[in-house]
Length: 218
Image (tube, rainbow, N blue to C red; front, side):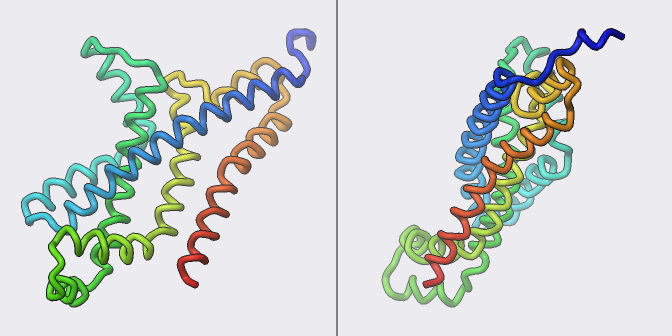
């Protein structure tokens, strides 16, 4: 095959990867925010709900935590298309990533809530606090701080797992790298750039988490 079929990697290709990195950030941030809020609510349900509510909620979450994310993305995207409501890859990916994030955060939030002893909760109630006041001023501040590092881990995982959305056509970093590799056949340089972009996305999250955790310990 004639080597002229392929083109050399240029600055336009780097900017293309940069745009894909912004798409990765966009879908990751939305999924982390929505998934975390929903996950905290589900975690509270698991910790405070009745046995039937806990059993049913835990069963549903186990499905999302156990089935590979790639399969969830393909099944959901295919299902909405078959149902007559096709979505853009961005929205399909955002919904699935958000639910997946919620399933992971729910377990983290549950652990944080249960980490606050019953004695401490009863003490706050004996001081005249209502149940919601106890949750707001005692359980949430103490419990969620203890599991904050785990939440950072989940967030970083979502950033990396967002690469799987490329399977349904969303052009994020992984998909963009595949396109450029087909065009230039310079996979080593492309992967170095992709790795750098992922580092630039993930490192600030990790550092922010470390700084906030140190501040809480003072």
